[in-house]
Length: 476
Image (cartoon, rainbow, N blue to C red; front, side, top):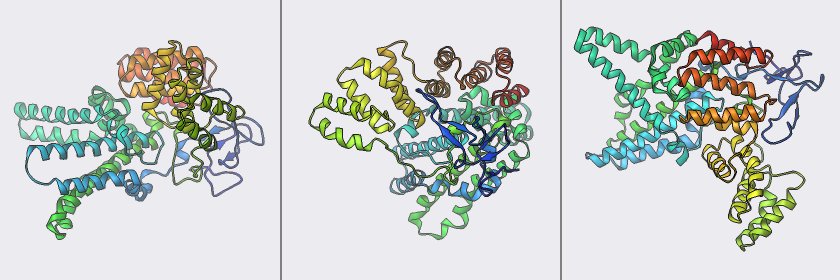
């Protein structure tokens, strides 16, 4: 049952007050600056003046079976639509036999599959807007696509082995049962980046049962989506002119692939509490909700307009002074100005100022999920100062991204630095939980994970992550 704002009964509640029990929408909740670098905006009940609690993503989204119309329109946003059109036109222009043509088609299909993976990851984290279509999107974490290929190879090797040993009947029985669990394997592959984890029957079967009957419904939709291109080719596309057949088929295949992965990501989001997947309010973005209204993307545009002519004239030091003067009161809040200032300091080798600003710049990059640039800035600043210390939120995100890309040791070191440097920060319990997940999911050290989670429950019994911890403990 959904909870609605007390003052606006038609609007979904985002926050609740533990003292007076009021439910609040974004318009009603009181927001305050957390203060310092890396601090989140704090939300308070305007009546009690006490911190309000986020009600969770389940109160803000529809079940996936009710959202299917919007799930089907997801690829018609500019970024995925451009990708689908490029794929279709390329297949039309480069049709024909030959090894080179085949390789080019494979490269384009790899881009579609990689973009679909990114859509799944973004959706699972709470961002229901399609990711941008750029070089970073189709190249970062490309190993996940090849791991999916390996997943299918392992399945069919096992199928061939069973057929050779026991015959076709048991072989096809194994194949049918295994294919039923493939969506669970893909979900695990994307959320953990571990092929071994995805191929572990205990893990993917457990995930399926935790989702429950909704998994069957999801699988039904995925089956329809998977067979749709062939259906269109046989009953609809064939009535179009011959030259359009390949183009329309590839457009349909790209469309249904993106929809399928978006659907799997949405199922993770809807059942994240059962799966043990953490979703934070700051990551939640749904274009269909009233909270995500268009905002000014560059609050420091006035400053940029003043300093850009100085930069063009080569007056870099004057540009640095001007930025300092114009942002002395309010600070640098826009990512474009922050990047410009960082690059100016780097070019002029003003190391002390660069390191000071690097903390703020990293906060902005993390807030915008600029993974590649954030890693670059963190690396550059760490080389200049080995004990360079970003804000708590930036450290948490950097650790999460390191874990996603398989840099387990670096992720553990980053979480450890966060815990030691900001012991009183509210995000510390979440860092402990992520470390425990790494020990269980990536390092296969379940005993260590259980000890950490038990200690987490004892130390932070009232933290909002405890229900997730208890659910996670019950399923490992």
